[in-house]
Length: 78
Image (tube, rainbow, N blue to C red; front, side, top):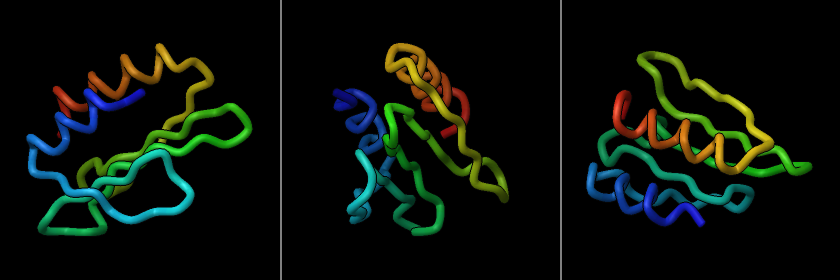
């Protein structure tokens, strides 16, 4: 479902981080608090990622819009 995004994170040296309540969680190998998370609750996707000194989160009900946004963040911010 999000395999292309996950492969791109791995190419950028992110590593999987164990989580029981997320679709996936990756973190920087140098800082486990610098995490990229994707969760789904009540048919709403929550995508969060590090942005400078903060952890930013945004919500989507459309999987297509979520994928577009994730790819934008992958290219421009990570």
